[in-house]
Structures are given as C-alpha cells and as structure tokens.
Image 1 (tube, rainbow, N blue to C red):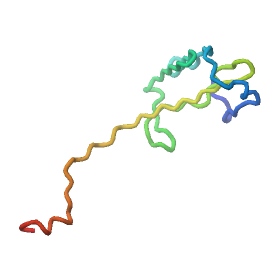
Image 2 (cartoon, rainbow, N blue to C red):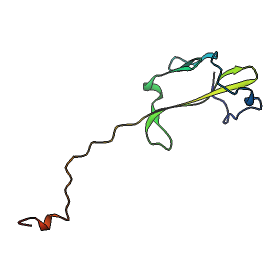
Image 3 (spheres, one colour):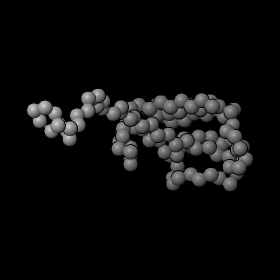
Image 4 (tube, rainbow, N blue to C red):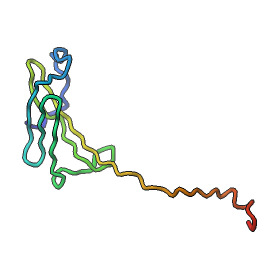
Length: 109
C-alpha cells in the first residue's frame, strides 16, 4: 500500500456502499507505520521516533498519513487518511482572581 498521487475522490461506484462493509479485513504499511482493519475495528501503529512531526495548520505534534488505498470491496475502493494529533492540556491557571479596579477602595489603598 502506498501514498496515492493527488487526493482520491469518491469513485463513480461509491453509491454501492451505502454502509461500511463489516466484513472488510485488510492491513498495510511497513514496520514503522501500519494499520490493520478488521470490520469496525481499526488499529494503527506509528513509530513516533520516525513519524512524529508538527502538523500543518494545527501547529501540534502528530502523525499524518495521507490517502492510503486500503481496500477494494466489489467495485468500491476505500481509502484511509489518518491524522493523530497530540493536544497538550492547557496550563492550569490559579483559582484566585485579583480585581485590580477594586484595590483603590480597600483600606490603605
């Protein structure tokens, strides 16, 4: 399985797949970046030492695996595009809020 040239578009037979086929079983990739699809379960393995990057537009660390032709089911071709983004939790702010405009009214202010 490889990266396609250009972005895949739904083919003219896409209407034949009204629901995702639960019997679809496929896998692809290589040792450092691969997937396994078994019906409704998709597992992805990515070696972060090799594939972790800053995602375009998001400015977050992640893995972006473009347009992989996963399988053909009858006349319908299925593609995968996998984006894994790591979103750090925001820094916790103090629970104490100081209202600076109230300070002049306090005794000694």
